[in-house]
Image 1 (cartoon, rainbow, N blue to C red):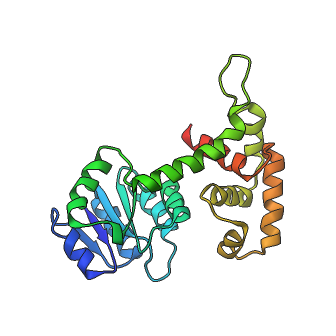
Image 2: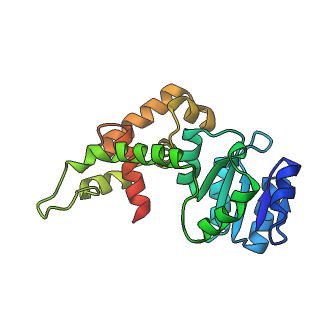
Image 3: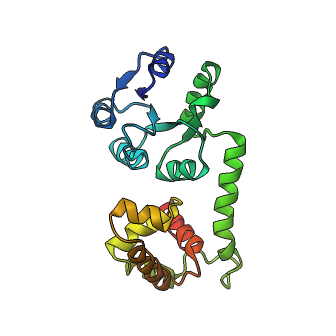
Length: 219
């Protein structure tokens, strides 16, 4: 098990379990992950104002079989959604977890389950369902849902590298302003890219486009 947490009390608490490796920053976390391939990573999402969501992607690339449980200072629905879509299997606020929960959370993610507060899990499922519903009404002649029509797939292949990058960020719940700041471009430029994405995919709105990429990743 690998631990990356800013608070020494959290390191001490988690350190009681199975002699874990402790990292002080994201660079160390990546190095230790590549070396040990831990079964579970407890990841502090807010380290030195760095991008914790991007770090989840990097760790998953280094160790695809590793389960990542995110520790947040306070619970935020959009942040939780982004973390899960990036590859985390758990998301919890430090305020909501006590020592009695930790071992069961580890067992749960090892079983392939997602670890979130029930209320948060419900809201995230509602969010995914809302994204899917515009497409549910469209069925092909065989009766199955036409979620991945050939025309849509062709549209996906027509996206530029920048458009795919922006579509991925949209699917994680980021807004135009956040995307602009992260990519160091203007918000107007982001909006032009979004419109181009919608046109190429034949999507009516951002939620349809976001759901489409979720389907692509699931194939």
